[in-house]
Image (cartoon, rainbow, N blue to C red; front, side, top):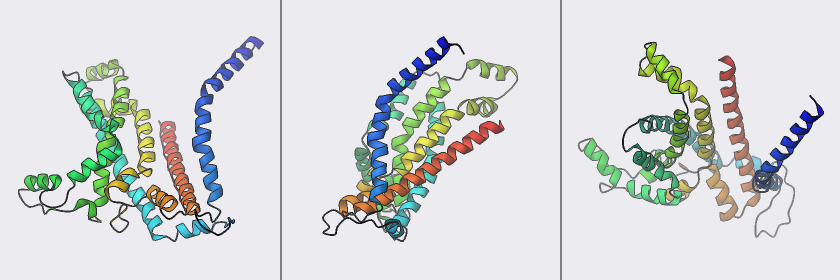
Length: 302
């Protein structure tokens, strides 16, 4: 490479770092620095308002949280919530994207309606769904299910039932967030060349074969992105739990974020909350790396 070429590359690199610097500064101040502080605090006995001096405790906080029933239940609930929400929300988003991608009159209205819950605050969404899940025969969802089953459905108190509380929160989260994934998949759908479908029709491929052989492969990167983002958001579950169930009943809906916030601001146990945060970050990071590795392996096989 000539000296002129090296100068061009160096200039482009400097410009790239210049444009990326605001984002890198924000990540450093609001993500990296707080995480480093959490790691440091997790090895101490820091508790707000405690007369005890600050001391180094080693891995004591981690030993305590992994022997705590509430924290173990939170990890289990987070994992179960992700297993429910991620595949269902991704599949529903893909279905909605395929529906609203049809060249029919009024589709813009339907796209807006499906996306509208995304712009609503989670607190408002949670309050609306508390009304939907209202207990007793007068509850909206209970009435609908009783009508559909011709009276066979017995009214339930969804948010105070250990069996139904987490599925109820999962349904709320899917309804609120599916529009975001739908828009991403819709944009990817509209980027697929129509010539591919025309060639497939000439070869005699039906709609299902076109979907499997053209649509899904072309949407691979968008689907991977949606799955990654949805997984991270699933492990960040807090607002719905705080407003709808407060972690109950009997730890049926408690999450790592809920336990960490309660430890830090409820019982003032900052070191315990920091340890939970570090574990939470590590779990999400490992899951994200695993998903990326699986996606990369599939690309290599193809």
